[in-house]
Image (tube, rainbow, N blue to C red; front, side, top):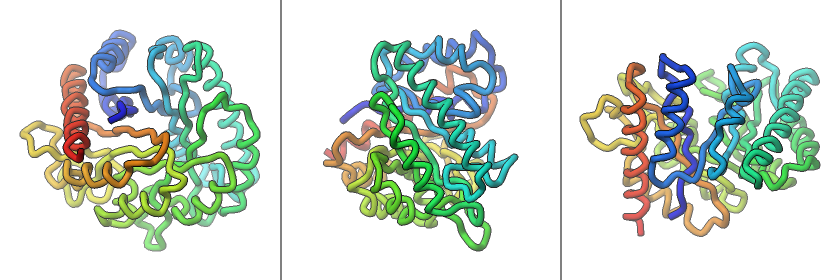
Length: 313
């Protein structure tokens, strides 16, 4: 099987003692992990909330990268409910497109540093939620972005859970059917996340259903868990719960829905999709875990995902 893109920022986010030395220790430790093709990097208002230039200088040149705009999108939505590429607000859509211009520049800078087209993809989202979004606004944004020179970077529209009338949605963006109807008009492919599909439909089989719906346009798939009535990871939350291994580790979810058997069946469903990028996004608890324990957590999880996919044969 192909190596994974690792959303390593999720494994480090809760670490309290972030500084230059610890950041470097964590990054070096990531390079010693098995089966990693590269990183999914979070994009806020820039590549970093504190020092984007440092991030650019320290990215390993041998890895490939996927940029996800979701962290910054959620931060902006917390301040401006109309922010997003699908916004019906002219100001909200303009702000999202301005951020895309910075993303575009950073992609060129990363590629220049690595001396090749190292940024494989960038994940966009159909924000904001109802009633501030519509399909035509998303279409207009993608139409404009489709004309930019992305140096081979694949634009991905990552599906998150869609809006629910009862107010229980986590992200509350567009439905998968709406998104597919827009992106098939452009050089934009679909990205799915196991946990986000499952929490949307409150059903562990939802990820398989979404793979079937979007198979012809699927460009990336990330494994991220969710839980039902878990004392740590919550219930139907976008908590990046780990793969359930039945271990005695402190990060083991008690009510995790992502199991090795479900990884196997999903991996089987994904077989044969050309050029598919696959990733892992899991987050450990408790927050006081050391860097070494976090790296051990990631190694255990990657090995378990490898085992599940290899067992599928």
